[in-house]
Length: 446
Image (cartoon, rainbow, N blue to C red; front, side):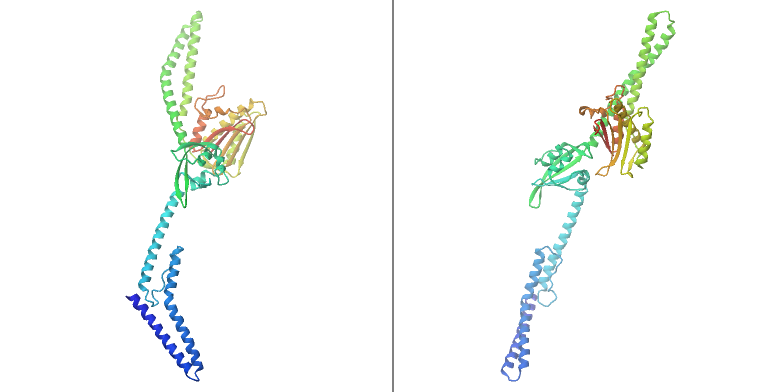
C-alpha cells in the first residue's frame, strides 16, 4: 500500500506541475507582449516532462542496474531508491536483504573453498591432475617438492622420473593402488600410485596420488634383517660358547699330554688347536655381525661441508689403500652446509672411498676416486663417491647392501650394510650406479 500510494502521489504531483506549466505556456501564447514568459513557460514544460519521465523510469533503471550487478556476480551494490521518496522502500528493503544474504553466503563459500584449498595444498601426499588432453598439473606443494626435474606439462615430460611412472600418469584406468618405480633426485625409489576420476568445471579429470614409500620399505627390510640377525647370532653364540670353551680345555689337556714322543698325540694336538682357532673365528664372526642388528643413533648438527670434506680427504690419503690413488674432491656451492651426524657420515664416506680405491687399484688404469657434494633441485644434498674400477654388474647392485653379501675375496659384507643403515637413519637414500669412468658410483641423498 505504501509503495503504490507513494508512487501515485509523486506521479500526481508531476502531472499537476505539467498542467500548470502547460496552462502558463498557453496563456503566454495567447497574450501579446509576453515573449519572455513564453520562453520560460516552454522551458518549464520541458523540465516538468523530463521530471515526469525520470519519475516513471528511474525505478526501472535502478532495478536494471541492480540486476546487472547480480548477473555479473557483483554483490557490493544495494538498491538505491529506498530514501528518494519514490515509494519503493519495501522493494528496496527486500532486494537489499536478499543481496546481503547472498553476500554472506558467498563469503561463507569463499571461506570453505579457502579451507579446502589449504588442506589440499598442504596434504602430505603429492597430487597430480591429468586432463582429457594429457596435460598434467602439479596439484599441491608435496607434488611441487617431489617432482622438480621435468620441464613441460605433458605426460611425456614426466619420463624424467622413469618410464613406469610416466605410463601410470597416462593410464586412464582407475583401480587399486599399485607400486611404481620412481626416480627422485637421481635415486630409484618405490612409490604407491592411485588415481580417481572427478568432475572439474565442464569435464572429467584424473587425480593421481603419488606417495613415496621407499623409506617405509627400507625400515621394514632393515627391521626384518635385524630380527633375523639377532636370532641367528643368539643361537649361534649359545651353541658355540660351550664348543669354544671345551676346545680350549682340550687344547690345554693335549698340550700337557704331548711330550713329543707320540706322533698320534701330536696330530691330535694339532687338530684340536685347529678346532679351537676355528671356534674363536666363528665367535669373532658372530660378534662382528651383531652390530648390524643395532640401529645407529645419529646426533645431527649443521656443519660446513668444504672444511669437513678436506679433513675426510686428508684421512683417506693417510690410509694404507690410498698409495698411488688420485682423489678429486668437489663441493658445489663452496658454501654448502649439511645437517647430519658428521662422525657417522665421515666413517661411511671413508669406507666408500677405501672400497673405491681398492677396486680401482686392481683394474689396470691409473686408479682414481672422486668425492662430489652438490645441492639437488629439491633442496637436499647429494654425495657421490665414484671410482674407475671394474664396477659392479647391474644384477648385483641391490645385493651389495645386504648383510653378509660381499664381492671381495676377504670382505665381511658388513660395511655397505652399515652404510645403508646410517643413511636411512638420516632419512636419506643410497644407490649404486655406474660412474662416468666405468667404475662404481655410490650416490647418497640426504
